[in-house]
Image (tube, rainbow, N blue to C red; front, side):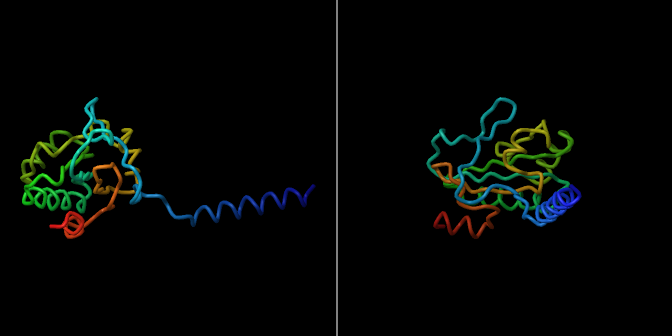
Length: 162
């Protein structure tokens, strides 16, 4: 009986150790169909809503400086592109809605592209896009397929043939 208990304990410890070194799944991978983006009963993005070009979906908050800087960079790049090949959707997980509004003004962002998820980190959207390990950006094609995960503006230009 002691041998069986010892074997069970050893197996349990080995399983615990191997799972501790397993890579964490962060975000969604290239090639996958992007989940729907709905905030406050308004659908911002859905695969079945045909869009001729691409959708650039970005998640950000001011407490995550790289995501805030990326929001400004993406917003400016899409605005300069100007021929509607890319629809930009930026979703903020700012902890304070008033601060979110101030940041949109201060960073000179187009309000029509910026959205606030009032449900915060507890939202279904946050969970669907696996944002618990960090904010991400997705370039999604007209078929709803993720063609780039955290793309640079140069990568976006290359994909779009600009």
